Image (cartoon, rainbow, N blue to C red; front, side):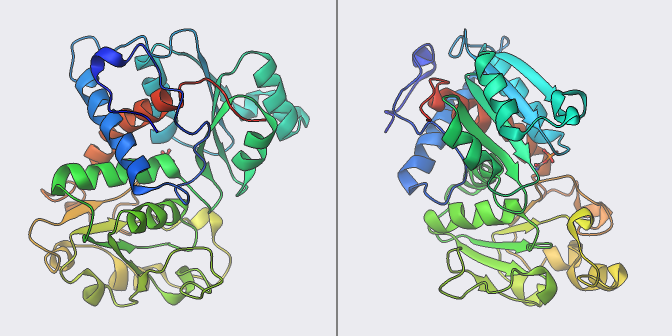
Length: 327
Ligand code: CP
């Protein structure tokens, strides 16, 4: 495990962190803390006039996104450039994928072209795991299907701890389309690992079937279908987007009814603790999961999440070091 680092150390990437970051399901609390310590240092770098250090000079990062993204793709690009890595962005629609090239052929080609780190988003759960088994490059999962989005969860946890001073014992209510949410799943792993209390709130059709049973592959969390009850005394309220593009017929028959029962508005937010944070991974569907006037209210840290995303991703890239370690 990495020792505490300082800005002065940033020319010497550690070789002791994991080579791939695919989910938080196997992160220990200490490993989360190591990422946070490195993130603190990266925030110091981002506060300078020249926000650049040579930590990854000579390394190449490829952003390979098979699904749409604004925040994750741009923040990985900025993070890598701030660490002096070379960055290649691949638009899948303009690549040989459009001619039928397989995922593994694409990845092997990128490796042959010198990719030290591959940041990858894919619609299929597990795709980054397959890639990590077949390449020497480091692989960062930037979202795979409904499964995992580890860098998002780490920036969420970092933002909570930065604002509230701790994670252990916090009541974190996750509200919305939990069924289709890779953000919720990675947050559940990360939050439970560090001792937070997680309450999920959604209509029954948007809660994963089998959650809470021993055989379901998620840690134990609470489920409360009534938002007013769920939000009572919360330290953090995390709203999620309704992912209409992933919905099958009948999961949400009436959007107006959903808004009435599950939208976070000022009245509902007032049931949380006075210092409670309002979070959202973005993109927000204003007027659906969040009332328009709470998006920018004093309790909203949505823009802080985005800003912290750059520092957290710099920390991950730095710790992984671009040194490779897969097959
Ligand atoms: N939170 C998140 O993953 O946003 P993007 O889809 O814009 O990357």
